[in-house]
Amino acid sequence: MGFPEFVIVIASIMALNPLAMDMMLPALPNIGAAFKIPVENHLQLVLSTFLIGFGAGQFVMGPLSDRFGRRPVLLGGMAVYAVASVLAVAAPSFETLLLARALQGLGTSATRVIATSIVRDCYVGRRMASVMSLAMMVFIAVPVVAPSFGQAVLLVTAWRGIFVVLTLYGLLALAWCVLRLPETLPESERRSLAPADVLSAFRQTVTHRQTIGYATAAGGVMGALFAYVFCAQQIFTGIYRLGHYFPLAFAAVAAGVAIAGFLNARLVGRLGMRVISHGALMLYTVVAGVMLLTESLGMLPLSLFMLLSALMMFSFGMMVANFTALAMEPQGHIAGTASSLYGSITTLIGIVVGMAIGQSFDGTLLPFSIGFFLSTLAALAIVLVVEKGRLFRPHHRPI
Image (cartoon, rainbow, N blue to C red; front, side, top):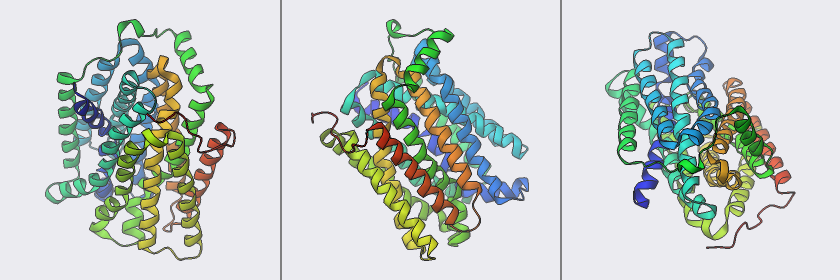
């Protein structure tokens, strides 16, 4: 497989997750009406249960891929995703839909873990960060168009049609991987699934200062992003009264993260992972502070909120690939297990933080602004501890 196709395949399988997550946003009111959900905040469970399955599944996908290889675990996860999508199409109750969403998340946990592991199998250092950034550019561009795509589906069919589209995409991606994606983990480098060996790999991951530090910091900034996604439909349609224009506003904001992915791929080889991600974390903190201040003063109109949200997305996009690369770099010998544990830690921290903020939504932006600011401060404090108070240090000489 050539390099361009490799990047596209990795991005395509990683895109299963955000596509399944964000296509749902315009359909939440329709789902609430179909199942007669009385509390609007409860509709956030359609998103959060997906992420719970995604976060929990990552605990096992890495060790399984280190033992049996990347390919069988990836294909199995994608098959689970396809079956879960069919279940969602036919869901007779809200509880069944939530079960299907959790299974979808479980299936996409394989795509995320295995994609990261495959990249780590093939590349190291800044080259790894560059490949991850190129894949992430597509991965994080998906949220830009996913809500609009979901809205377009709703124009011609009911909300269940969204799950039909997700099923077809999942089957197409599965077929591509069956035909073209090779195994990247040699037999000689596969690890035992003996409990002692798995626990040893987990211990190596969670006790490495750089890995666990950047994982928890990524969880903090991801929590703010999850909260934004959970509340986005309520914010844009409830507070700012955008109605059917919500997907366009969401897309305009989410474009910031796609731009960041492109810039990071171009700059990381020259500037290094730490310089870029630390600068982005500082910007994230400033944006959170300005949003909290303006909301507290009652001076947060739609235009300013969208600008701050776009800057939030941009700075997150400049952090996410570099935080992942920094966390994974010391773990080449246990890439699958480390990627699995890293993904679980970041996702589950993000879910806890995001749900806490999202469920506190009260019709104003104050709970979100407070949660955004506090979680960002926590992430900054963790990075300062990891780096012993010295930010922006070059990591490698330019290549």
